[in-house]
Amino acid sequence: MKKTVVGITVVGKDREGIVAAFTNFAFSNGGNIEKVNQNVIKGLFGMYLEVSFSKIVDVESFDVKIQSLAKKEKMDVSTHHETNSQKNIAIFVTKESLCLQTILSNAKSLKGKISLIVGTENTLEPLAKKAKIPFVTIKEKDQQKAEEKIIEICKKYDIDLISLARYMRILSPNFVWRYPNRIINIHPSLLPAFPGALAYAQAYERGTKIVGVTSHYVTENLDQGPIIFQDSFKVDPNDTLEKIKTKGQRLEADTLVKAMKMHLENKLEVRWRKVHIKYK
Image (cartoon, rainbow, N blue to C red; front, side):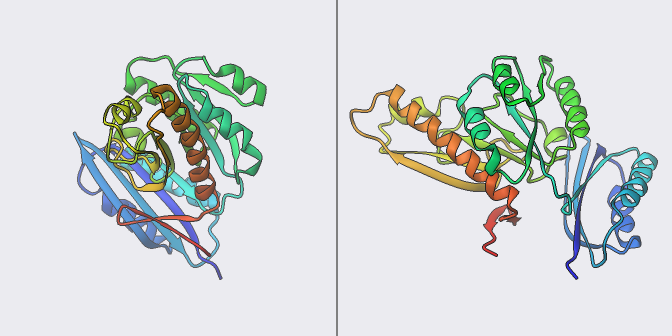
C-alpha cells in the first residue's frame, strides 16, 4: 500500500517542549517522521514536519486532533495533505503583468486551480476579473499587518502553492515558514550574481554575454532558496538595455510557469537544500 504523507507546519513564540509535543503527537498517531526542519529567529519559532503513515489517514480527524494540540501549545499549525486531489494556487503580484499573463494563459495545463491573486496594488485587477479569479488588494504598508491579512486569506482558499509573479515585497520568516518549499519565486539573473531589482541594468553595465533567470523556492534568506530551474539567452553586442529587459522578462515568465508545472506534477523533491527532479 502506498504510504500517506502529511506536512505539518508549526509557527509561534519560541519555548521549550514544542518539538517534543509535535513529534510525540506524530508517533502516537502511528506516523513516521521523514523530515524535520526547525528555525528560531528573534524569538519566533518555526518547524516543518513531514510525517508518513503506512495506512490511510482520516484527514478530518487528524486535523481536529492536531488543532487541539496547537491550541494547547498556543502555536499556529497547518497541515498539508499530499492526498489533496485539487491543488489551489495563489499568485502574488505588484504591477508587472507579463508573468501573470503567462501563468493565466497556461492555466489549463497546470495540475491545479488558480484560486486567488493577491496584489500590493490594484493595477493587475482587470486581468484577474477577465479570468474570473478573485483578486485581493493588500495595501497595508506595515509588512506584519499585511502578512496577517494574507495568511488569513490563504487559509480561506486552502492554498497549496504560492507563485511570486514579480511580487515586489520581501516575505518574512513568519510567512515563509508556513509554506515550506511551496512558494516559488522568479529572479532576473543566474543566482547568486546581480541580486536585487536592477539585475538587468547591472548585467548591461558589466557587458554580460549571457543573461539568465532563476526560479527557486523561497526561504527566510532572501534569494537563497533551493534552485528549481534556470535558463538563459545570449546577448547581442548591439542589444539595448530595453531589448535585454524584454527578452529577460519573457524568459522569466516562461521559467516561472515551468517551475510551477514541475512542482504541481510532483516532480520536485528538496533534499539538503537542493532540488532533485524525480523522473518516475
